[in-house]
Amino acid sequence: MVNLLDFFAVQETITTQSGILLNACLCDFGLARVTATSKLFNQKFSTVVGLSPRYAAPEVFARSHLPTLVPDPEEEKKADVFAFGVVAWELMTREVPWDDTPNEQIEVRVRSGKRLTPPLVNGDILIQTMNDIASACWVEQPPKRPTIQDIHKRLNSLDL
Image (cartoon, rainbow, N blue to C red; front, side):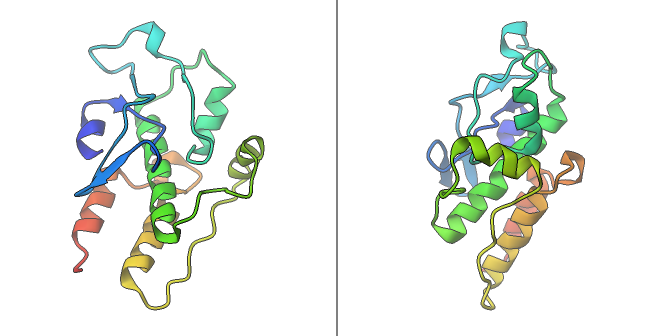
């Protein structure tokens, strides 16, 4: 995913069902599209084709109601960071995100600031770090979220 974001290919559907997680490599091209800053940009790629509500950031839900809006590429990257936080939560809990919530209610919860409940840490440094990362990924304002490169550095700094 780090390399993917460097090439301006925006995913916005990072999920455990659609991705591959090996050696910190997370990727899915199912709903990826070219961004306005890419050399391959074409107007037909400028709308959101679909989204996975269980992993979507608040701004992705907001954009889904404005299909003619061309999103900022940096904001799109931060939406992927939000989704990464959901995947991190899913890996820690081994649960489906928002499993008890119908898809149409997930948007209401996420846009109102509700987030998934972090698992108990019980002194586990890995779980604590992943909780911290997930929480940082879920910050309401996209510019305040970490970059995927920041997350990569933090994970690599763990002494496991």
